[in-house]
Image 1 (cartoon, rainbow, N blue to C red):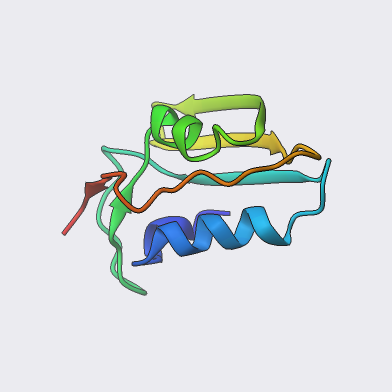
Image 2 (cartoon, rainbow, N blue to C red):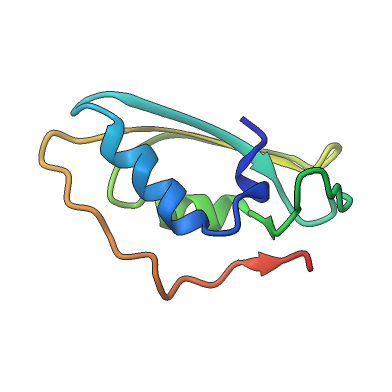
Length: 98
């Protein structure tokens, strides 16, 4: 919750979330979107939109997404399918804050 923007190698973090989740398990994630101020402790790298999270978790069953324009946060709830095949995120580009 609210840490993904601080992880420089976000692709590895997302992959780890998916791979430690058991089949039919749930992943809940919140992070900040464009418009959220820079907060450098620890480092601050990325901003995520709902469309980014939907793409990143398109290999899972998306149960809910939500965005809050007031505080610039986004939320996703997904379920890892039994027949999970991970998508490659290495070429996906995000909005970089720095």
